[in-house]
Amino acid sequence: MEEVTKPNVGNPTETVTDNQANNTSKKIQKLFHHLDPTNPPEVCPIRDVLSPVSDKWSVLIMIFLGGHQKLRFNALKKNVYGISSKMLTERLKTLERDGYLKREAFAEVPVRVEYQLTPFGYEYLEKLLDLMQWVDAKMPEVIKNRKGYLESYSK
Image (cartoon, rainbow, N blue to C red):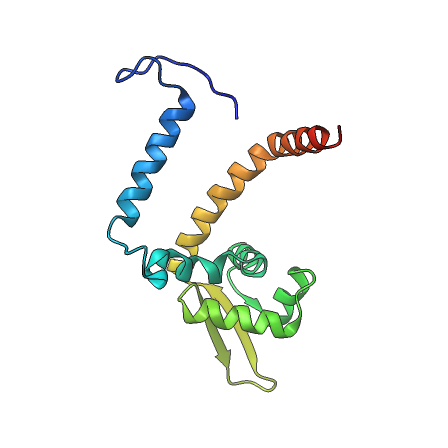
């Protein structure tokens, strides 16, 4: 990352990168100050919450459910390219368990089951979409960085 020197009110020689690092460090300390690093389960409780909704399948499921009011299992399976029925079932159960989506079964023959995001699920999806917009904007930079990295190791 390129450092750009800009005047800072507190320290005129501090770079933008230093400022970003300091702000990030403060946020991390604020979030994790109470954790005991010698107790591994407590080191990252956020992992327990993020892991079930940040894998490649759950992200796609959340996006497709967010784009529709309700979807049935087969519609999700068709849209989430490459997912097996077993994996889709597991991901849907986990997302339902954690409150991101609601499953509704109708007493019909054959049984009809629909899935939809809960308000909590929509709240998470909004954060995810913000991250996706950032990724989309930064993709050219990532490609450039990858190219530079590969070129530096091919010499």
